Image (cartoon, rainbow, N blue to C red; front, top):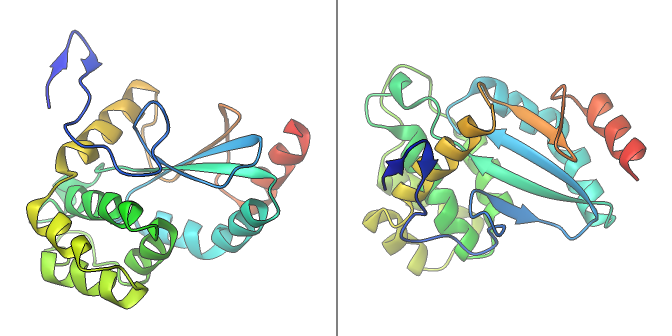
Length: 190
């Protein structure tokens, strides 16, 4: 992947469920759009998922919102093996298997500490097995099919002004990453 004059080129492969911009995974069909920027190595993102995740999933299930998850590789420098990029890429593989949300939740539940090695590719594949992903998932992770997509998602987020994770936007308006603020913004947008 290359950039030209501040513009990010499209990655070779884009996962199933990506929006037209290609820089995330869309979950749900509701009319109110929530953008959620996360990094699978970010402890605050794990906390966000644990506290806000059930409410976000309910809003999706009720048909009120669509969530565009943007799995960034923001914290690569805080792992010895570019874990953020590899986990983001693996989440793209999970999207192809139709289990992005389940896989993302499992990645947060098995989050390695910052500053050391992340989960190995075999461990990322094992988590996929646990959530029910089919064998093509393992090949996708081993081939690092979506590694350039992870960089693309990150570059597009930074172009958009995202400077930390988690970052939440409701209808393109930044809101604090907590349940109360998000639900109030969704209600106002409806």
